[in-house]
Image 1 (spheres, rainbow, N blue to C red):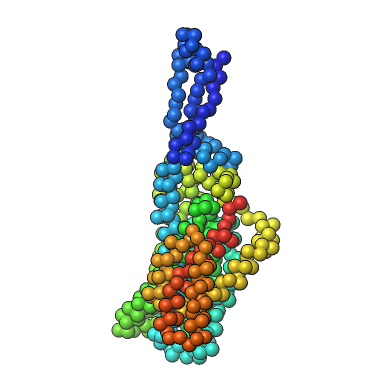
Image 2 (cartoon, rainbow, N blue to C red; image 1 turned 135 degrees about the vertical axis):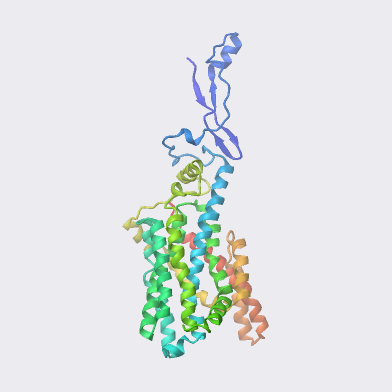
Length: 404
């Protein structure tokens, strides 16, 4: 009886399946007798994904064996980069504008109209970060709720709250609104790396998180110019310029939240901008088990036991200790230096940036001790900001990865 086996072939590093050979073919050719069955030719074509009513489970399949080509996988990644990552970065940029425009509002006359003292203004700033830290556990909801609805709700809330700041009439009302704004933004941005792990493998996340985080220095690079333009136009209107600033920068988030609800997929298989075949590729590529490159499967199930494991993980506390250095980089929150940070960020996410960053921090400190001129301190801020944002990208990828 003829015996058939699967003989895989390799193309572009991806092993093609369903290549059939017939062990009886050799014996039949030597004896001069052959049948139609024994003349089966070698089929080197890869299996079409549409042939699977139920896609195969690749949990135990090596990385080199996949029913799709390398080019197909890269095409899927490019579409996710354009339609998902850049859109999430846009949302983060809008949120960053909404949280940081209070300084420009103060310059435009907010403190005078609300009769805020220096202490009250400082506590208004702190209220955002106090609630942000206290509610930073909320990204757990990415694994419980529908991500598209959850993200759209977060964007809608912070856009509405940022706009309502234009209605503030006292220190108490502004303090309350800033505290609510901290809660709404804490629910979104810290959990984005977890959400992206639903679409990308472990070795692909760093660059995408770099794209996401680069929206922060990008937003700051033009925030002051945009605020100046808005307040300049608002001077001729019956509404105070600082109130106009809150409205104009907050309301776009409300509008885009509607689009976010329909555009953001809950999983790779629900991405509307992918074809049927591309959706299958996007799902299958994430079903691979652990390989030599350390790939893993993204888990969307919330487990209370894993919360305790995270609390026992020293990486979490090392990250928390390192993040206060962000205050040093706040010196660089002007246009040109933030552009420098963004331009360098994406080129460094694949290598450790702590040596470069710490060296430039040291340069700033030493320049201060030696009472060097401002040129030396100013020059040290550029690479310090660039190194910091690169290091943060790597830290976030390392500690918040949701793949097991």
